[in-house]
Length: 575
Image (cartoon, rainbow, N blue to C red; front, side, top):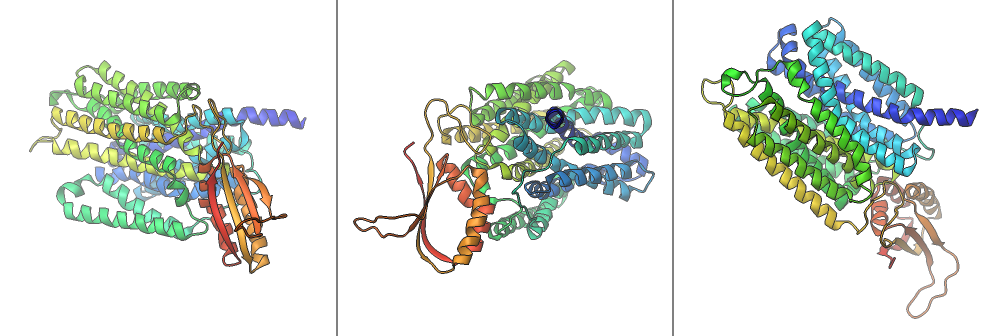
């Protein structure tokens, strides 16, 4: 009976993870087509109405690393359920006949749900077989983006039929369904996990992200008060540097900055950031071009709903790419898939720049964009999680999603600024050539993304299928192992050593570490000294280094403090 129940829960888990990821993505983007309707309904300016989208992105960007850290601990299920309950409550605020301030509060609560995507990945990695888990994680990443193409036209249609409250009512229905689904299907996290939220780090990061997203959304500030905008940009940069220092000094950081500095993770996040700028830039260009009145000499004058239908090829082909990617990954390494996907997106820019006089051409360009974005999103988790332990899955992917969100915001801002610069005096719409200029800028962004991804591919060992887990499988040769070698000169405080051993054991378990030597008899020769020696084996040198720099092991080192004097080094094996 118990076995049958477990099989039933396993079958329910995958569609549940997909459903939750799709819902939070769709609800997060549901404000985009409603900005004009909100301004009319609540009698506010378009700039104020724009905050119904910006505040959701902001709360999502801040909540994502916090939820990622909570998701790395023992209370992941409770974190998911409470977060979804907050999203449902926020959805109710957007539907009730309350003043505009309450609508903003509701949208902020809805945006918190954007941080759940990384937790869905952590659940998949912990509770599904390795190969199945990798495929599901790739699809979750794709669905988190394709949700834009689902929420946009539905919200626009409901707004046309029943007003802005009806459109937000869609969010209430689907988030309530997602909460019920999570309650029925999300399992508890594995035992032995621990997580603490770095409150100071979260506060500094929130301030920095607020400035970044504010500067991305307030385009008029750059054109009218350039000095003020530049000053705020400098402050945002300083805050991000302060945040990095705080995280490095913390024994329980919000984001493991040491792990983020790993070349594979840093390169992947750089590709995500620059690629996100380009991808969202093309998305906004096409939808805005489709809605431009024909009287401007170009455009098609589509309504918000019909323009939203242009996103259908984006979502469909993006999902197709997400389904194909796990099969292709068996033959092509993830960084090469990132590079190939960036080239496809660049091709979408080229199509838009060269041919946009017919509506069908916009559909083709949007389909190409979707296919490229889908492949890019599906391949990205493999690059990061190949050097990330299972316990840090949610945290590592959360940081990547924050980087992606900032890239999207800057992409939207760059598009707006480029089109504004191409708008002549006395004109309400930009010149057609401004779209070409923006498209060329997007091609440049995707070229940088391609080169970054190719650099990642050159750094990786010659194996075709980087595994998403704590061990590696190889095709065509074994990968050199990594070893920790510790020689203890003196042990001043045995109690501190015992506390360290307990914490280190838990910290290294997710990395697949194997202790080959711990003390024991020593026979010294030549200049050797017979001292206590510990030898720990890892599946790769990179994993050995990443384990040493992980947040959990740093906590163990803090407990050890000055309790011993030892010679510690990491060495690479021959095979």
